[in-house]
Length: 208
Image 1: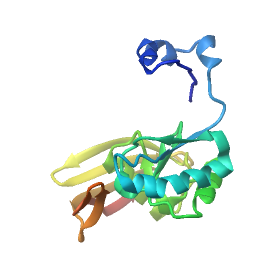
Image 2: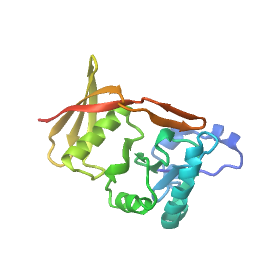
Image 3: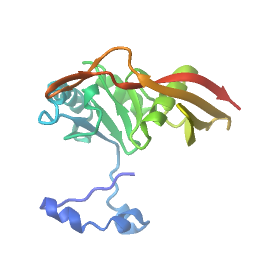
């Protein structure tokens, strides 16, 4: 859920009563934002690629969703520019190509995820984001609410991530390991910087 507050100064944010916002009460509920918000990173000071590729994506999304689309300064993962996140669920997307924004928004309005650009949920650690993607890709399941995250386990260099299928209650166990990427990738445009990122490889996907 999203809630709207207006401030005259940035300093007024310090007076916001976070526990009161989290508590159930009519005053809080009256501030609830009625729909989703889409945040597009366009911060060229952090990384020029975010401005170069993020601004066209912002304009494309805003042409469809209007004031529900905002520019923001940083959401992480600028090496995947252009990036954006859908709130309140926190679904993240990256390397969005021109013309794909409309399709992604249309999918989200149907509670569906555009898997080829999907980076996982912002509330998940990286390993869980990777497992979420692998599970959806292998099972061809793109509905946003198909799976419930249960937890993670680690044994040496192997990670096991568990999800429950909300349709039939089955539990999926996704086993992954992390290794350096085979090739260098552009990690930043400001300054230009390349390197070998750590990537996750799928070992097994089991169900109970």
